[in-house]
Image (cartoon, rainbow, N blue to C red):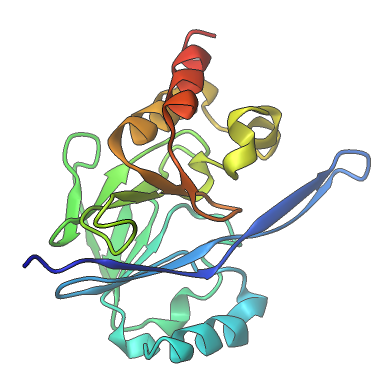
Length: 215
């Protein structure tokens, strides 16, 4: 029997945009993946959330030194505030891959980066020019269905039918973000967005994202 990759949502992110005050209250979603051979952590919240993150990891029997790969989906401070806790891990900040003083070149535009069996990092720019997402297949969710952990490619489920939520949260390339939103939705059964909980990808969602590309 094939090993299932266990997806554990440690923290469901949030974001609230106050246009009048020109400010946003936000923190990111954090996801732990227990793979067949490797442990992967995706995003780390702000530097002020150290104790919250460590408490959640301990609850799931994971110490910082157990993490093999730390993937920060992009370089914004709410996603990479606690990287220094994971000093044995290989670090991703978007498409930048490093360990200690070594930096590793990878052609993300043409090739996924494999982390473990059925776990890979793919290039999904839009919110920033270097954003990445983690694709996990054969998961513990709903009898092995697939999941994409996407950072701010999707703000939260509601942004599918109210696109102002992801556009106003910031996009460096709106066209690429639309293309990659559809790309991800066509690939997987569930999405874990950057500032909300996991949601199922329905055919209605896919059709809406197809229509969005035509804009």
